[in-house]
Length: 286
Ligand SMILES: Nc1ncnc2c1ncn2[C@@H]1O[C@H](COP(=O)(O)OP(=O)(O)O)[C@@H](O)[C@H]1O
Ligand SMILES: [Mg+2]
Image 1 (spheres, helix red, strand yellow):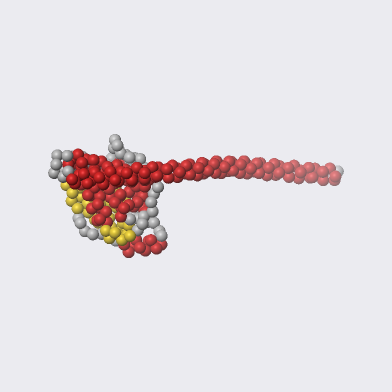
Image 2 (tube, protein in one colour):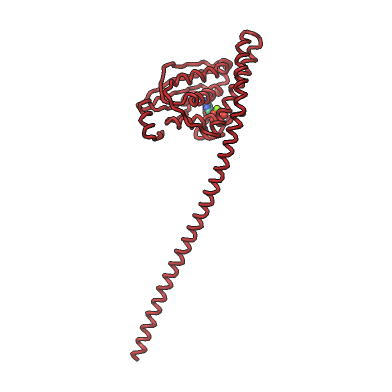
């Protein structure tokens, strides 16, 4: 009898142990299932990363190739530009003067597109020096003068000098892109105003036009590569301007004017601030 009780107890505890083993087994299976799912997910992520890496390598190779093609095209274009400017000068006052000016302006705009493409394919590190931002402005305005004239645009600008730390060639490209957009936005003329605003840490360089303005739906997208609302636009001008401003520890902002047109502001850190930042090597966010 006693043995039967013992046997029963042993059987009960065996059943209990086997039940808890079952529960444990279930839990373990769950764990294995979730771990398997995690491994699969990680594998998929790894695959995607590898694909991404391969795509990046291909893009870098394509960028290098595009950059060298653009470079090859630009060299003869620069000589053509030089000759056409000489021709323009020689023909000043004659009836062919407008034609020569047209060729010159066309080549300059082609050059601007190529420079944007070159920068997009292979961004350049700025070589920083103390520069007067007004010099970059004046050079860009010189190139755009015939377009400004033809459209009957009134240029209003303050000529005060602003010394910042920057790369004049790259900043000329930023100015060209912003000013050209402003001029293109005013086919029927209007006022193009260029002025400076000073904040505690920043100097802003503002370009205000009275053009058609930026659609509210587009304001977030205008800095995206290849976004353009123009028939023949490349959509690279603002992307490049944004990138170059970032590489100068600055930034760019676009705004719809209350009355009409748009204002683009280029924010540069003030010289003392820029030097300190360069030392810390820390980019600035808006
Ligand atoms: N001053 C401006 N006025 C109105 N729209 C502008 C202005 N500047 C830029 N935009 C808008 O931003 C878009 C992108 O500009 P951008 O990158 O320079 O490319 P693209 O000039 O080749 O179109 C333009 O197509 C236009 O829709
Ligand atoms: Mg443009």
